[in-house]
Length: 445
Image (cartoon, rainbow, N blue to C red; front, side):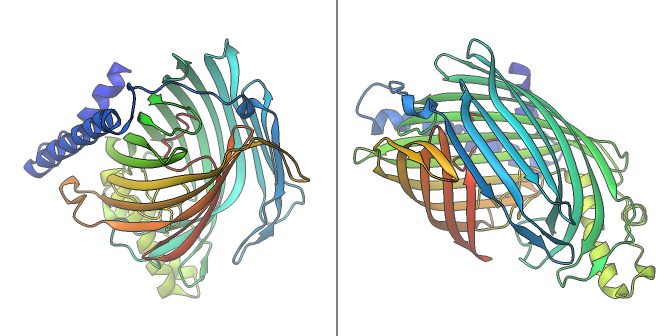
């Protein structure tokens, strides 16, 4: 873990003066946020820091959820996968299953076993396997990209992940290591006018990911903190099977302060930074990369539209090969008013202020047709987010996008069912997910 920390801070060194200045800027900002999150609790809290740890026994009760997840992809088809989730079915273990029952143009299979105890509730095992057909919007790189600046892929993706998680000192300290391998094969590419192209060069790619991370959780409750601080550090290394693609590492830091308000309410302040660097270079010549990842536009009826999509695809991988890709903003976790992975570059940052109001904490057994367990909390939230991405770290905070909105959460048998709706420059976007936002990978889960 000491080596991981050294790797994290070493990623910002560079030979150019601008990046050196950017490196010191980030270190100063990281120190500022660390000190803020460290000392703010001692000012805001009414008793000694860190706060006393609390546990709700109802969060360990058996819970379940079964529901259809209908979806369609233009030009491909529709499907109705069935999702099943069982929490605490064996001690702290959660099980997730998703399966498309009828074969068709779109299929999905997901199996996840999470937090299975293998050593005395201190060492846990997680396994995840998925094989699904998915539609992805690949936006132009950077914070200035418009909501129509993308090309769309339809691809089959499969992935297998193994993760070991250790928790100590009443879950105050966590260490994780993980390994995953995956493959994706693109069958169709669309432009933003829904023109379809299928003469795709290099449609397949494979990868191997290694992760290591730690969390220091000095809060009053591991599942639903109301006061204290939480520090997370995650290192991820991605190695591609294609030599044409650069391998790169990503180091991310997440700091959160929880301040109690009006008895059961909470003010959350979050700061997030992510940096990437190339570990092994792939192709960085535009013409060579264009030949390798072309779309065979001479064979397409819409040749001009095809060349525009081809140029977007080439630029996507060209800049990714040169600068890597830090953790993206947009979607279920950060900058919720934007599409999943909407903004990305070699560096990213995100700052959030969120107010959580618990309007019910009555323990209520639930036994509905699609959902069951013990409900412990009903919560409303109001949030404001600032975020930016840039390949030049000195430019990272000069142009910031905003996202603000409200949400509703219900905690049932240790799972957080969340619905958020947010507004940003691209319009209004809803988010329906399980777990709180602003997490760093699976740390803390």
